[in-house]
Length: 124
Image 1 (cartoon, rainbow, N blue to C red):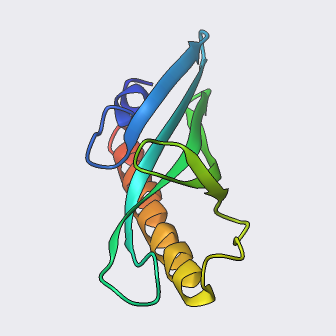
Image 2: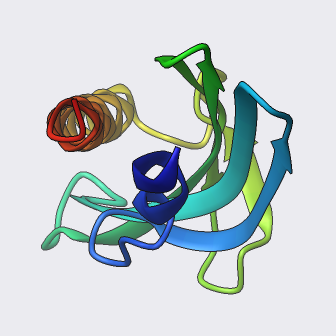
């Protein structure tokens, strides 16, 4: 349970805005809302820039086993205001740009999940 709590203190993985936990004798539920910066183009031309993508993550420990959930992906502006849900491509965003944003977000979230699995495995 200690590793699960400290996972949300890893600033190089996710910029956590809020983190909460509910602890019972054999159970622990941690939830967090944060964002990652995905390096992607905002338009067809130009250089890639950091696009903030926010999401919710929960990590539940029950009898020594853990389960994680990552959902509610949103593209935000630099101030954290929602621009659009990642699963809903707006008309104003070109298909190539949107596809690149999805791929890079998936790659970064896959890295976070892999890191979580390794981090939680080290405790056993």
